Image (cartoon, rainbow, N blue to C red; front, side, top):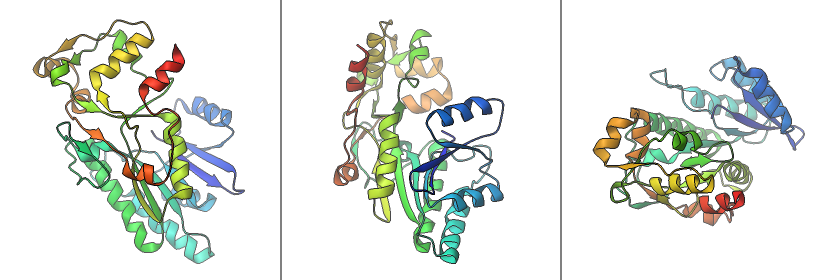
Length: 282
């Protein structure tokens, strides 16, 4: 997710960023198709960040931290510059909704967790997200409204593990399998906007469905919906040797997630579970 969405002036006009590169034209066309204004930008550039801030005070930030840097302080600069500009020009306090990950909770051994569970990030990827969240919290001291949305597995029409299933990538045996939650990409987008408008100055939400499932069961459900063979099942030790370290980092962490604050805000998911979405494919 390398996207930043801004609500610009007038109030119902949106600008979406994309990273310049070989696929730029395709990304630009996709943004235009959704009636938003495309903006090619380098998010690590000071002039680019200042331009984002000048366009509007509502920002939904989906770009991940820079994995190649020892420390990525982009969000710290964003909140401080945004706060300064708002004060100088008499603008409303910026509202920034950041899409983080439930990986910040680490491996909960299948236990239930919520927004008030202490963070326990274990992978380097999740630790970078914890650092990013901490940078955004600095903005609270300067009047920036910060909303942290921790998302689990994101799925949608073009974000299903179809290739994984066709390639026969293994899943874990049921008794050794990990728990996980999901959220449809449309619901994540809707929730991001909802929180940006309805949320208080600071909100933390687990942006997820309310029906966790074992990962292998998720793969089986997708396979059944598209009439594909179900993935083969193996033990943890066997699967660890068969998949990439990145994939194993996802498969080895087990948690069941509850979103207390999502309920508090009164938000309703269009797809409360993966099964509800797959039912539309029948």
